[in-house]
Image 1: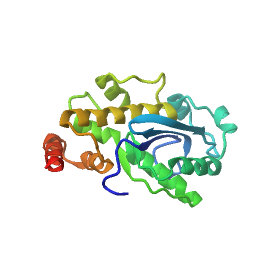
Image 2: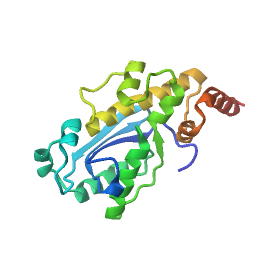
Image 3: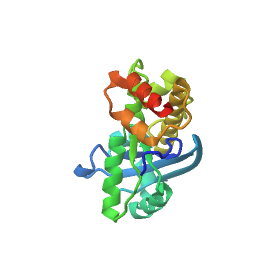
Length: 212
């Protein structure tokens, strides 16, 4: 991916899983994703996935996804192949992206699938842009910014759509504050990694350089 690819056109993803680690045998049980084009949500992807075993009572209560629902859900091969086509060559955004990347990498590796996009994280970016929020969980930061929420959390498509709204809001905030109209994905990636105390100077220097 080139450094000049726009941050306004990405795929925002979310997974619900049987646990925290694919290395310990945890699997994806639901995938949700939305395509953003020029800062507008354009398309959606959603599917349950049968993991091949029963999930715990905790996960059923946490997500609302039951073993009965998963019994008739499609298998990972079918869903992930369709999901790979949905991703295309887009860059990828998620809230707590390291979690979703681990599961995406693990599921794709099992099937010999790949993706070319790079990742950015709404949670890490929000920590730098909105340091005064109580915390940066998705629900909390949406409340802090007064962004409309869907009716449920911990379902993949709902969380992906809310993360997408947060991403769009952040892009608009950076544009407005710095009077700049083309935010690159590479810039947002760098923002996620800098020292939080350096956010203002980092963005100021970047846009001063771009405007010279």
